[in-house]
Length: 342
Image (cartoon, rainbow, N blue to C red; front, top):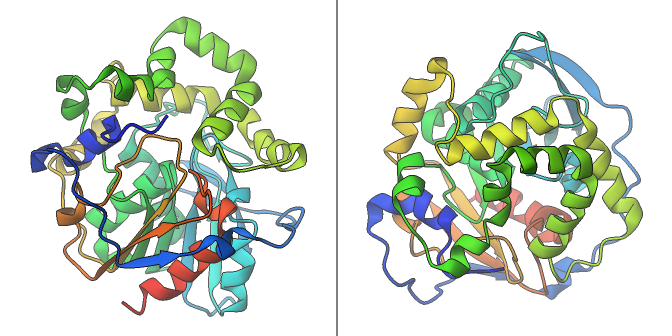
C-alpha cells in the first residue's frame, strides 16, 4: 500500500493546495550499502526511569554525559529497538543519545491512574519536552519516524529553541483534523489507512486488545515489504506493546485524528497552532525509504515549503521501508551527523 497521495500528505499540507506531486528532486541519496547492517545488539541493557511531566519515562541512554544530545523517537507499532544500531553509532561519534519509550509503550507509565490516556500529537510532544526538562537538557537534535517523526516535527515547530536540528522520516507530519475530516481521498488512498477506520469501532478496539502482536506483525510486513526481520527482532519490540496503557493511547490517537474523540482542553491552544501548519525553521533532513509501504508522499514537493531553514531530502535505496532507522541504521545515523552541518 503506497498511494501517491496519502491522507497523511493531505493532513500535513492541506493549506498548500495539493495537486499532482512533482518529480522527485533529491538533495542527497544513500545507496543500498546502508541496508547491509551488522548483527544488531540483543538489547540496550538496563533502561533508566525518570519522572517527567505526567509520566515515569523509560529510556535508554548511551554516550558521554557531556556530549551534544540527540533524542531518537520511535513510531507505532514499534519501540526503542528501532534505534538499536543507530544509537551506538551516534554514541561512538560523541553524542549523548536518549531513546525514550513514548507514552503507552515499554516501561513508560503514567504517574496517576486518573490521568486521561491521551494520544493526541501535542500531548505526546509535551511528554518529550518534559523529559528534556527532567534531564536538564536545554536543547537537542531530534530524529524519528512515524509517531516519532510527528512528535519531533511538533517540537521543532512549537519550541524551536529546544531543537538544534531535525531528522524526520517522511517529512512534515503535523496533523490537521479538519483536513482529514473534510477531504475525501481516492479508494486506494483510503484503503491504505484501513487500520484507522478499524480503530474507529469498538470491534476494532477489542480486536487490537486481543491481537496486538499479530496486528503489529501485519503492519511491519505491509509497511516494510522488503525487510526480512526475524522472529526474535519482532518479539523484542512487540513486548513493548504489552504496556497497560498501550491500547487506550493508540485508539485515542487514531480516533482523535478522525475527530471521533475529543482531546483535552489543556492542549487546545497548542493544537490550534499546529492546525495552522506552522513552518519549521531549524535545519532539517527529510528521509524516505524507496520501499515504504505505509502512506507517504512520493516526493517532498507537498511539504517542502513547510521547512524554511537549511534543508535536505534523501531517498534511501535498497528496499528500505517504513521503519527506516532499523532497516538502514547507517543512513539514519549519518543523517543525524550531517544535519547539524547543513
